[in-house]
Image 1 (spheres, rainbow, N blue to C red):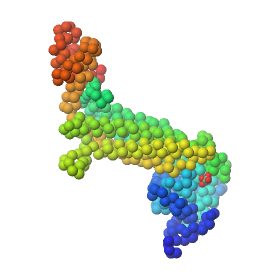
Image 2 (image 1 turned 120 degrees about the horizontal axis):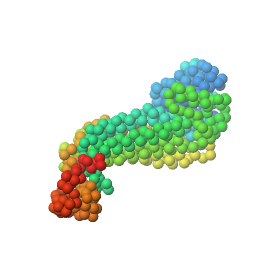
Image 3 (image 1 turned 45 degrees about the vertical axis):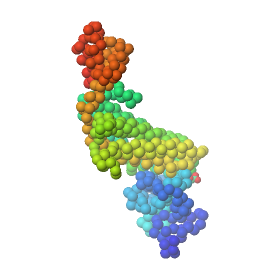
Length: 463
Ligand SMILES: O=C(O)C[C@H](O)C(=O)O
């Protein structure tokens, strides 16, 4: 950096050269130089959550006599701008940094101090003012919980609901489309396509139920515990007041930790949430894979359904169209499962009073929430909504499944029914043809009307 391009900033370790135009100061600059690891910055949602915490802390610090009102107001206003995204370019730090997130906490403190100083026309200190009554150890984990709660409530649950509605519409539309069930990938007794889509919708709704069940613990914040959970350097009542302020300003279901030592040292609520995200991902994988198989073909596959044509599939095979959205869903699932493994590993890094893998936990939980949200909407809008059934083929498969012999067990017994099934396959005849040929009606085992009723594939789906 030339002399015109930098200014000298100072921290407790000495002087640091900082880019002249940067709002950040010495500690952020040290971290920029110490952690050029991945090029991935902490996410927009996470920066916003940090800023909202700083705004709430400033407001409560003023109420409790820790900060002058004008200083607190300047910090809170600056934090509002950061939360809106006006200063994202002032958050240059890599995800892979100090395990407590101290570097990003200080980045937030320094940027807000600079912005608040400019507003006030007098110095605002990053530690003494912006970080007053706080430590990275309560602020940074709280910011992950706030961002995760925000993402679950405002992004993921609505997106999953959107997907469930889309699947439910198809469940209704396909209620009368009878097809062969498959177990072990082999022909089984009939189901309707509507029953299958109803099952998919229910899996997505159960995912929402699981998220809502985990939310109270995701929304439990260690804020106010400061360095080790005791709340050292806070005025009385700070924790409850700052969390109430944050809940009011964000409109999110945030509560004070029931036990500040648990909440300070463990990130179990986030490990739990990540596990739920993995369950949701696995549900989406099952649905996507079923759709890929059911739409396989168009000539040499199952071809029971058609997915909307979105783009040419092949650079070499003209006219080929591929199930690109389900493939994208499956890759999101792979990422979420991988993220969950990283979160679980990170969650195990709680040593005594602090977990020291917080930024990587944040990165993975927040990414999983985001990519599950976006893919759920794309899945609904660009795939599920446009699915059409090949009713004729579905019925043909259902009627040709040897397993439709199953309702005849009660008339001719399992062993005779197995012979019918095997003969029908070996001689490429229908079950009905074989039953007639083997003389069960003449032997008085069942009437022709009973045979017709027993072999009605649609009624087999609603026994
Ligand atoms: O940054 C802080 O507030 C505390 C730090 O994480 C530490 O415990 O050393």
